[in-house]
Image (cartoon, rainbow, N blue to C red):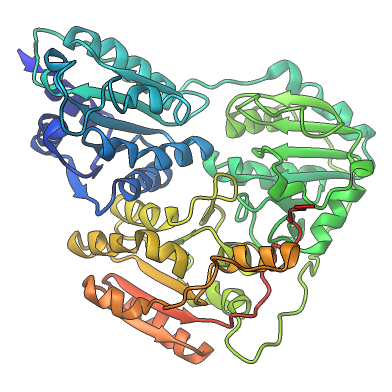
Length: 543
């Protein structure tokens, strides 16, 4: 006979999980120790939310299940933000939290996770695709099977199980776990309606969202765009769906975008939307009178399809890559239009500033890194500077979340990705505000020899909030750091190699040294506080 914790660890091992992330405590101890016994490497974080982000980074990098855990009570509530982030990004992460023994329910206990105080099973329901308290050992197999089928199913995302201490240690004679298999879900009927819409359109436009990156449909996007000679623009989260210099690429749109892409949005009569919800971050510059006549939207989640624009909408559900492959397979005898595409200069001039411009650094950064790298970008003005200026050469190598937009997420995600891909160059761009939230996670990377290069943009303020408030309200309350941080000293205290750069040359030298060191490195980049980020399109009216 084996314990529930044994069956859990065996299942994760069979699924190919190699690393798990979290912070241990009494109520989750049996499960975590069994994971270690079954060969899974446990990477203890410095804050549970960062461990959740690390599991998401691991899932993104591998395409497999990510696993994050925490003890009961506040350990579990600290994972909630990471769970919502994984849900917004369709990342398959299993969140596991501890719970007091079922036999002790009703007795006041430290870090209570029951309905008497902080009911984690209920709290995780809106932040995940499935959340359940496992009340008995003989229920565990059924619930784990269900959770895994959802997490790794067509509409991937996070799930949560709350495991009481005594359930983890309960002995079971048998526990049948079914390994989920990928199941293509293709909208054949609606796919057959695409070609007539393309024939009717005079100005079609492909809007590539982060779904292209999540489903790794980069080759299919290129083949589709080239076959029909359709221009491509990217959403903030879809940055990197297509190389920056491809002749059909017309740049990023929306917040962090260039005016040229927004002009195309307002001139098109047909949108082909690949994996985007069309949030306010994407269509903030689309005028109501310029909504296209028709919209073809590939999205595994129907929540917002056909409800944002006034366009006649054709919904293609299921996996984006599978659907595009099927569509392209039906067009083998289709004769592409006779068009010649030439590269378009969709950029605008770099700013001229008395001090270091972040935009100018990002404009050159990809030339300083090897082709085989992944760049994780945190939320804030630095993120939208990167959306606008970073020149993605390797499709799928740019990771940015403009939807849930949680500050500090990229720090943990980069660490999880490095654990999954130790030979790949992993770089994280974060801000001083993000770094003050979760920068202690640098020590996690140091302790486990995960040499991520962290670039900390320090402009001594919450820049995006400051510039937005200043423009819309004339006030900047709560956006200045009266005592700015010294990121390089903080990094040294955490055991990382640290650099400080105030010029292009200093940054280039620091980045070169960081790559040669092959250890955790933090480059503090001191930039001009008055540089205007490309976020002014999205404003609020408080009148």
